[in-house]
Image 1: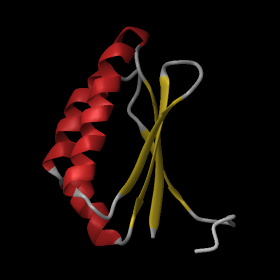
Image 2: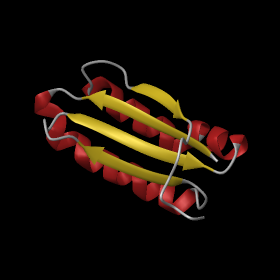
Image 3: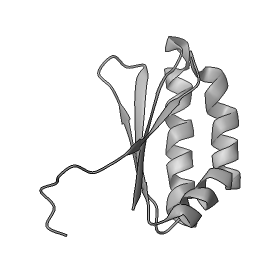
Image 4: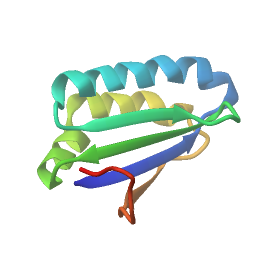
Length: 99
């Protein structure tokens, strides 16, 4: 399993526009990427967002990265950000999950 987190800060006046863009993006992931787990969060400052995602393998991650809905999301989101999103690959240390 490949796990990643992306964080970004949007321009304050763009928050109202970003939320529906994120919702549409996640709807597309749900429709076209049945094996992708994806969560988006808004931090308590109102302008910082985090996306946590998990892919079963490199092929699924590549398919996500190059999907038309991802390209559209990037086109719509990035101009609304103060700076480009920052991505990190996560390595699981421990979990309460028995699976």
